[in-house]
Image (cartoon, rainbow, N blue to C red; front, side):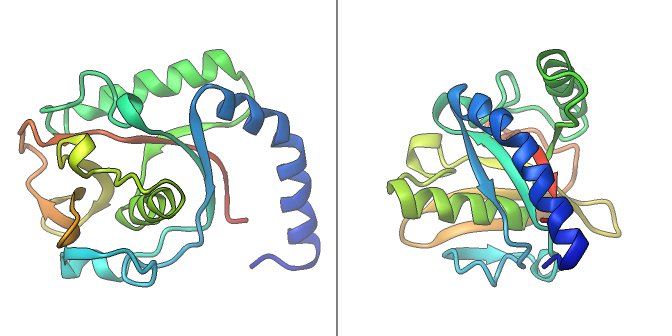
Length: 188
């Protein structure tokens, strides 16, 4: 947690971005401030967590994400991880055009961030992101391991919980898509 001048700088940055948060919310984004916890510390029901993903902690961030039909980027279902780099570039270009000079970053979430987003969304709405309404799909995440496997998060069954796993990045299946988050600020 920031202290002293760091806290002041963080609060000032947040105040400056308040109108932006309103704009993003008005476009159907959900805004969340993540707590920088491991996937297990979040307390979300998990069916399986690959041991390589258990201890990863994402920095505290303020993120925006879409739900419903906008959760997965259009055209991303079934594409491999390598194909998703173009989706990120396209989303970043849209943000830079709409909000020039603001410093928004379109990026993949970590598995722990998607767990926190999913748990928060479920606690507030009863809707399971990555559950039945989303075809039990998973999203590529930014986490990877030393042998080149890429992280996936999702497939949230009500009885068992979600899963966070590592798979070959060339994997292509209709059960994998891409959820892009917009980073508004980090390390609050």
